[in-house]
Image (cartoon, rainbow, N blue to C red; front, side, top):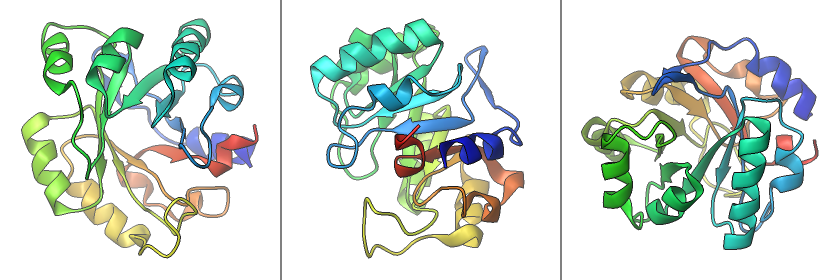
Length: 202
């Protein structure tokens, strides 16, 4: 499944931010489903990305080393100081305030090349926030039904495209993205594919 998703991702044109190509393929950690993404991250192609959400400090340190060794882009979810310590980008959740945002934004404004900023985008409120903060990319979700939020309504391809069109940044599809669903996404608006289960097994 991971191989199939990688093949789908190759059809995408990689966006550019802060002087570098952004990944087209993103592995996400999750405290319940994938608390330690290091084995799966080690199997990613060079230049792809990892978004560490809720990762323990030991795991995050190992991910930072792995990212440097393998040319991966690392984002830390919700903790600006942890992102600074790892020399990684910061991901802003949609419904939970991020810690240490100001120090990270100052480093970003000073030109730190690794200080990418991403955001979770679930609806109109996140779009307004994105217009204020100008992130480098947005994870628009849930594109399809997902194990991470069983029973939660999914956007579907048309509503996903509508949100992505209004986002002032490249849009990455998250939520239920896998070998069977990736082809249903609106490719004209799509800058990347993100997954937990579809990339967890290598």
